Length: 451
Ligand SMILES: Cc1cc2nc3c(=O)[nH]c(=O)nc-3n(C[C@H](O)[C@H](O)[C@H](O)COP(=O)(O)OP(=O)(O)OC[C@H]3O[C@@H](n4cnc5c(N)ncnc54)[C@H](O)[C@@H]3O)c2cc1C
Figure 1 (cartoon, helix red, strand yellow):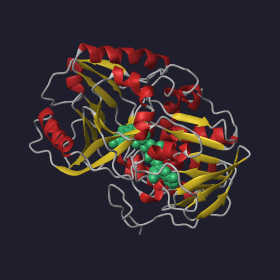
Figure 2 (figure 1 turned 180 degrees about the vertical axis):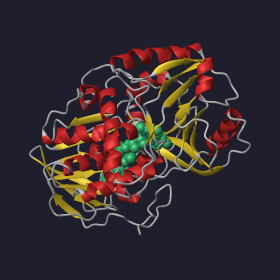
Figure 3 (figure 1 turned 60 degrees about the horizontal axis):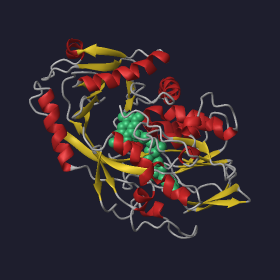
């Protein structure tokens, strides 16, 4: 029997996908999160030999720590076609992997406290109409009908019954196992240290376990992508913010889907509890990249001045740590092996607030008891939409990163798109919004929704 993982995953978990890596591979993918895993999977489904390198454990960073919301609601208009495809792919992959990943169509609902909240929802309804979504606005009474037993009366809500949820820490490892069955070679505990580039083309990847000859590389390293690529002259204005999440002990069902107001987000879990997260601001640890890219973040700062708190020193060994090396030799230890799993501590105040606020919102729960709390670093872009692109200056180099807090739901869609992009096929979607050059070609920063 497979050993049961602890949660959050850490380097103490047994390696499920041992090395050594092969000496050559048609494609190498850096990063075993939802993006890397699903890209590898779709390539293997087309019989393309793929090696996926993961410095720690598959899904040990964002891809297992997230809330598990799979939503079309509140999405950027340019992301929506990919998310709509992703939802179809989630169903297909859940079936194909043959494991219960908790995929459930139970809806997503945003609760409105003010007219301003409702106005924001109304703006999204125009986008929803273009894509024929089942999203609808509710008044206060309808909201109380949808989620029963709330101690407060809300102005109203926006709800999308066809949105879904899944258990991320089950889903992404299960998809990785499916990828292996389809032929992907996954190697855990194996950091990619650097690329070998010659004459403007990818020639190979240096790993901590040797060199892999390849002509095609995808960087899907989540919060580490910018550090990895900067050494090769590719600058991505990516920063990470710390967020806190908790899981409750089992409680009666008050709503089978996921919902949020300004103070708390909650989602029904497959184990009968809820995944909770506090509202309010995220924590940005300041490091050299935060200053380097500050100007690109001004529009989002202006739009939401209190959305971020700052801590002056990014902890040692974090992607944007002051002492984190920005350069290293391919045959010496890299920052990626120094931190196998980025595992920030949850904020105690955040844990206390979710326990309190959830109990206050649903007084019928006599006691809300947390059984787990964890932290995660969300990799963000200045305009809150990802980078999915081929790097112009280096033939054979691709990047899919900066999922900006919503990469789990869209993940399989991005994976399918990137698999086609890397083969030179039509992707079926307009990806111009996600081009890397948007940050350098004089385009104004066009903020995606912060809904
Ligand atoms: C608390 C929290 C809540 C969220 N809630 C939601 C939600 O409800 N719905 C939603 O859609 N999204 C949500 N997200 C966002 C979502 O989890 C991420 O966007 C998504 O998981 C990103 O996937 P990824 O594959 O790009 O990166 P990751 O999951 O971070 O994976 C990147 C992997 O690359 C590895 N790596 C990095 N560098 C190297 C290297 N040099 N060599 C080898 N391996 C390397 C890392 O170890 C890591 O495992 C949330 C995120 C967090 C943190």
